[in-house]
Length: 81
Ligand SMILES: [Zn+2]
Image (cartoon, rainbow, N blue to C red):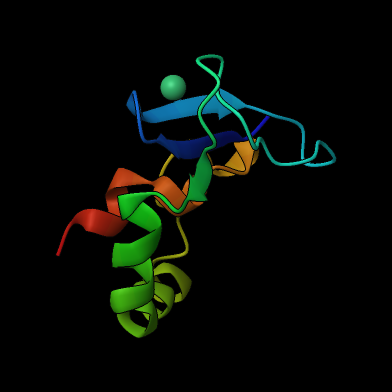
């Protein structure tokens, strides 16, 4: 199950395990409305997407062992630069 990150105005960032088919969380347990956020790893991946993609292709190796979980967008391997 993929891990999703949310931002709560009262509690800050927190992560929730959800099925892909689950509706996004709109409220935290504390009652505050929450917003889904992209992980920092996803942002840095976008920033260096060309190089990261090329490197992955030529190296022929998965960037981390999370690939099978579908959570590789937050992979630490993408933050190397
Ligand atoms: Zn909260």
